[in-house]
Length: 119
Length: 110
Image 1 (spheres, rainbow over the protein chains, first blue to last red):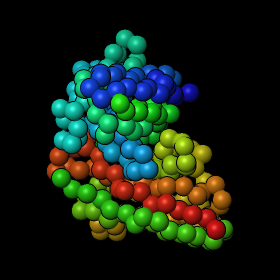
Image 2 (cartoon, chains in turn yellow, blue):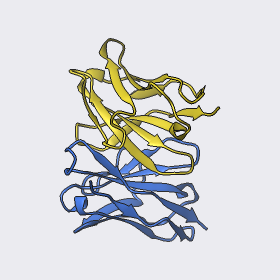
Image 3 (cartoon, rainbow over the protein chains, first blue to last red):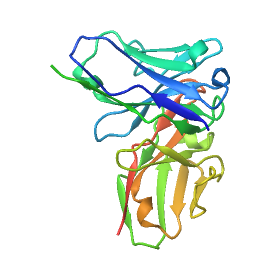
Image 4 (cartoon, rainbow over the protein chains, first blue to last red):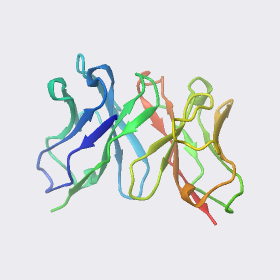
C-alpha cells in the first residue's frame, strides 16, 4: 500500500527554524517526484515545489523560492520542507503529494502537517 | 505566471447533477486534474486526464475540457460529495513541473 506519512503538528515562534518530513512507503521512493503543497487556514491549495529523490533536482514555485528549502534523504525514503526563520504568515497545513509521473496528477497525499507560528 | 479560476460555491439537491468549472489559458494545452477535499482531510484525486477516475472513485464523477475551460460533473450527488473541489493544471510559462491550483469550489448537497 502506497503511503506518505508526515511528521506531527508543530508550534513555533517567529524567527525560529523548522524542518518537517514526509516518509514514503509501499513504492520505489527514488522513482517518484515528491511535491509540497501549502494550505493556509480557510484557504486553497498552493503548489510550493517538487523534488526528485534520484538527483535531488528541485523546482520551486517562484512565490516560495528563497522562503523554504525542499530536500530529500533517499536512504530513508523521506522528503523534507524546512524554514530558517518562520513568520506568522507561514501558519498553514502543509501536504506532501506524489505525482503519478513527473507531470502527472497527485495520486497520493500525506495526511498534512499543521505548522502554527505565533509569539 | 498563469492562473486557473473557479467559482467559489455551488449547491445541489441530493440526487441531482452539478457541474463545476475551472478556467485558464493553461487548460488549452494541459489537461486538468480534480481533487476533492472534505473538511479536516487531505485532498484526494477524483478525475485526471481526459476523463479518468482513480480506483475507488464512483462513476458519478466525470470530467471534460473545452478550450480553456475544464469541468467536473457529479451526476446523482450524494451527501458524502459535499466538499471543496480543486482543479489543477500545469503552468508551462514557469516550467513544465509547476502546478497551478484553482481557488476551490465548495459544493453543498442540500
